[in-house]
Structures are given as C-alpha cells and as structure tokens.
Image (cartoon, rainbow, N blue to C red; front, side):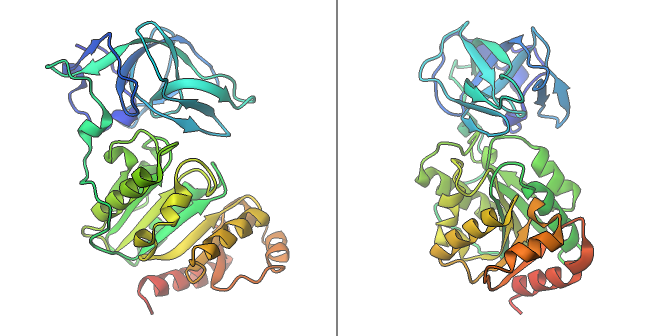
Length: 349
C-alpha cells in the first residue's frame, strides 16, 4: 500500500490512492502513475499542489505520487516522459501539480528542478499499471454536440495574465448569467486556475486532466482537438456561457493553435481575449486569427500591454483592427462599454 499524503493534484480524480500499490516495472507512457522519493530540493521550486488543493513544501525524503508528463515552460522547467525508466533512476518534478519527467532545461533565474529517485509504478489489486486515462471523467468526442456561446482567452505566452483576466470576466458576467462554466483547454496540470474560476463564480469547471492528460504539451493535433472538443461538450451541459482558457502561448507546444484551427470549436466562440506583454505580440496573434477567418469575432486585447493606456493606445492606433477593444482589469475606464459589447455578442444582439 502507498503510505504518503503528498499526492500531486494531477491525480485529482483518483480517490483510492491509499488502496493502491507500487511495483518495480514501469511503462513509460504519458499519464503513467509513479511514486518517487525526493532526494534534492530546489528551495526556489519546492512546492507541490495536493489533491486537496492545499500547497505543501517538499523536503528531502518525501514520497510523492504523480504522473509522467511533458512540460515546456520559459519561466519554469522543460522536461519530457523518458523512453525508459527503472527503479532507482533519477527523475524530476516538472510543475506544481506533480507532473514528473526528465528535466532537460530550466529557467536560469529559478534553478534546476527538484530531483527524485524512482520507486516504481502505481498498480491496482490486479497489478495493472495505472494511467490517468483510466480515471477520465468525460466522454471522448471529436465533435461538440451542444453549442454554447463561448469566450476564448489566449495569450502570447506563460504568465501573460490569462487566468487573471478569465477569472475577472467570470466575476463580472456572473451578474448577468447564472450558469457560467469554465475550462482550461491547454497547459500542464495544476488546479489553481480552476479554483480561481470557481472562486469568481464559475458554476462548473474542467480541464485536460479530466480527459486523461497530465499536460497538452507535445501531443498530436488529433489528440489535442479531441481533448478540447470533449471538454467543451461536457461543459456545454447546463451552461449559458463558457469561458475557455488556452494555456501557454499561441505559438507554443501546448496545442493552442491546433484548438483555434478547429472550426467545430470556433463556431461557438463569440469573443476572443488576447493577453499580451506588448502590442507587437497582440497584433501577431490577431494576424494569425485573420488567417483562420476569425477576425469577425469581437477581439479584446488585455494583459500587461494595457497597464499604461496612453502608451498602449499610441501603439495600437498604428494598426487598423476592426471589431476590437481593450480590457485592463485594474482600470475601469471602459469596463461598462467593453462588457456591454461582450454581452451583446453573447446574446447575438
């Protein structure tokens, strides 16, 4: 039996960890459940989000249960599922949620990933090695059966304000809509973003972990589009509106571009919020949206680029961008106007 309380939130859908066991044989597949022992901690990157939602600090000797997965993060760790893994091998904690893999590189200002020793794979009573796909909560679909008006939030990269803006939009629109469902379609497993949606009024939340993926990083187009369509179809039940956040950046390796290229998904998107650090990044995404015939959507530019409105307006006015506006959550100058536009789009007025 597994005797530890430090179970990564990537395993949020597994309720009987303490009834499971560990064996030496390990199948190196994305989503594979494994147990590791912490042997070296980076004090700058020593936190683990538990299945309870609490954040705990890692120390040497801790037994961690997580899932094999991929991550590419400019502000954090870059790592992947190894091709082969044996007991006592070295491996790393790649993110807050307990995604585990071989760290290939890291942000030099942050330092290396916390290093662990492999203890084995997690198995059930019949000695079957377990994977996140065994605990999928949503039906796999390739098409969305019930279309609900949606707002998509995308960005130029990690930490560009996507979750903050998504949560603010949920909070504001909850004054006008009773059932707002929210989902994260791309990223690496961590529940803090979903908790933020819920704290701000989301009725139901979901992410790719519910589909059986620890991360959308380095997955093929078919998997990404099936995963996102399945999540949206599940979130469409009982929803008046759906907020969907697409993690990392538009040009990253997490599938944001592949999701945006799926017309079955974009048909129901009425508003696209673009979080960016600068105007050139925002305009680049808008040009890409145009190439996918999505410039007819209401385009809202947000994120750090709008923190100085005079500078933002002076730069953005050099471009002709129809059907667009801006939203800075800390400056209420145009909040009434921009949310009126959003609500009119959602209601098709």
